[in-house]
Length: 456
Ligand SMILES: Cc1cc2nc3c(=O)[nH]c(=O)nc-3n(C[C@H](O)[C@H](O)[C@H](O)COP(=O)(O)OP(=O)(O)OC[C@H]3O[C@@H](n4cnc5c(N)ncnc54)[C@H](O)[C@@H]3O)c2cc1C
Image 1 (spheres, rainbow, N blue to C red):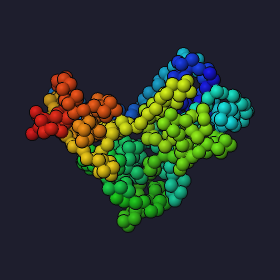
Image 2: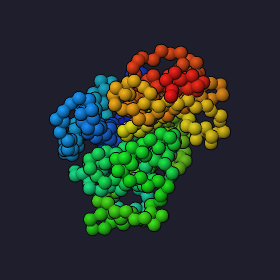
Image 3: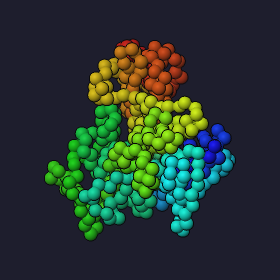
C-alpha cells in the first residue's frame, strides 16, 4: 500500500512511522522542517524557554534548602536561545532517525492535492512532480491568527517570531491570555521584561477551571505581571520606538514589543482542497470519527481538522487515520483529551470542568485536595495549588483539574480514569506511593465522599 502524507508535524510524522510499521510504502512531503510547529515553533522551544526560567526559581530557593553563597542568577539570553536551538535540533535528528529507520521517503516541497490519490509537489526551485498513492493523509497544521486591524510591523510578533528574538525586550504587551500568552508572559517576566497580558474573557486560560486560573493569576500578579482581563483591544498603532495599544475601557498601554496570541487557524489554503471538493467548516477540514474527509479514502489529522489543536491529539489522530487506511476500525471520542499549561505552577486538566458540566446540564460532584497537604510538596518547597476531581451521577470520574508543580505529569492517572470511565471506588482503592504528589489524587478522589484523610 502506498501512503502519502502532506506535513511532518506530530500528526504527519507519527502517521508516517505508524504506516511504515504496518508495512506501507510511505512518502512524507514537508515544505519546511520536520517536526512541524510542535518541534520548531511550539511545544518544544517554549518548554525549553520555561525550563530556563524555572531554573531561576530553583536557584532562588537554594538558600532555603541549605546552600549559601548562591549568587543571584542573571539570564544570559543568547545561551538560553542557543540551548533551545540545540534541544530542537536534537529532537529533529531523532525524528529523522526514526523516519529513516522505517524507510519513510521524505520530500522537501510544497504538497497539494491534484485528486484524492494524486499529490503534486513543488520544490524550492519551482520544479513540479506528481505522485500517486492509495491513500493521502493531510497534516498541514495551523498558523497564528493575526486580526486584520493589527498593523504588520516587526515590533508586533507571532509566537514563532518571539522565539527567535535576539534581545530581551524591556516591555511586552501580550494580546491573548490563553496557554501561549501565559507561557510566554511568564518566561519574559522572568527574563526581566515588563509584561502586560490582555485577555477578553474574565479570566486567564478561559477554557480552564476558574479556581485553577485564579491560582495562576495570583502568581502572575505577585511576579508583577500586569493582568488585564475582560478587556478588549480596539486599536494598535506602531510608534517610532514602541507599540501603542488602546483598550475598549479607554486605557492605553505602550511597550517595546507586542505578542499576538489570540489563536491559530488551520492551513487549508493552496493545498488543492477546492480541486476535489473536500468539505470544510470554518476553514477546517470536516472529518468523521475515523479521520476520513468527505472523500472516501482521503484522511486529515491534527490542527487542520476541527478537534483540539494539540500535539498529542494530532498524534492520536495519526494512529486512527493510518489504522483505518489498513482497514482496522479505529476511532477516538475526545472525552479524555489532556490539556496542559507549562507555567509555574503548571495547570493541567482533562474531561469536564465544573463550568462545562453546568453548560451541558450535567450534575457532577467535586472532590478537592490542596497540594499543601502533601508531604512531598512540603519537602520540595512547592506547595501551591490543588487537585480537583469531578464524578457523575454513576460515580464515574468525568473530569479533573490540577494546578501545582508537576501537574502536567500527575494528570496522566486522571486521564486514564476519565478515558477508561473508572469509578470513584476503583481509583480510591489503588495504593499510591508515599511520599508523592500522586497521593493528592487519592485524597481528592476520597473527598468526593468526604472521606479524605488528610483534609484540614
Ligand atoms: C507556541 C506554541 C506552543 C505550543 N505548545 C504546545 C504544547 O505544549 N502541547 C501541545 O500539545 N501543543 C502545543 N502547541 C500546539 C501544537 O504545536 C500543535 O497542535 C501541533 O503542532 C499540531 O500538529 P500538526 O501535525 O497538526 O501540525 P504542525 O505541527 O503545524 O505541522 C504541520 C506541518 O505541515 C507543513 N506543511 C503545511 N502545509 C504544507 C504543504 N502544503 N506542503 C508540505 N508541508 C506543509 C508545515 O510546514 C508543518 O511542518 C503549541 C503551539 C504553539 C504555536
